[in-house]
Image (tube, rainbow, N blue to C red; front, side):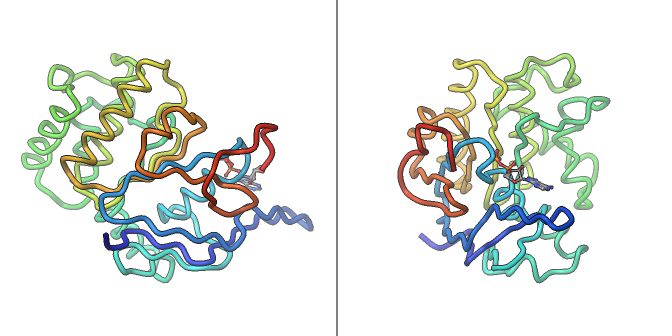
Length: 233
Ligand code: ADP
């Protein structure tokens, strides 16, 4: 399995005036091609911070992130945006869909940004929406969809560009148990059929246990095993 994502000694601190909050501490990780990895950890331990750095939405204080053999944080802002569009899909906890646009328009957006023609982008968006079983909801706006359907639109939007890696931040965090199970089943199916690598951050240990590999973010590093019962990092 070749590496899709490599993190080498990634550290991240936030500085507020004189105060330093050290969140990631020389974190190392490799995610293979087609791997389905769950990252668990107590709230406030740095899961979102890590995912934003791996997704090139934020920069580390030190260390390297290498995706498909490219050292992503050495790129210019413009190159980074283009790299993200081409190689990475991101699924946010609260879907971040554009409320004034339909499902198909939301899913087509990353392709339009890439310069694909509107006709082709629409066709690809419709195909992706059918893969997440939403063929009957193309024209619905997010406000006309259930929570689970919105999250499926967000998954379709992350996958429509055929990225090699998808990063998901608590993709089922605001869904009930049954809908969460359906979303995880869908992610596993898409992983199996498209060969996309997934890194999923979650606090749900039961669902995490269904992924290929589980790591816990603790003391700023990723380690095998479950989070501490007392909720500390
Ligand atoms: P998690 O996703 O595991 O709940 P986060 O990555 O959101 O954790 O946050 C990790 C820690 O970093 C928390 O203690 C949080 O308060 C702190 N933090 C996050 N963002 C900032 C910021 N912009 N400035 C200062 N501290 C931050």
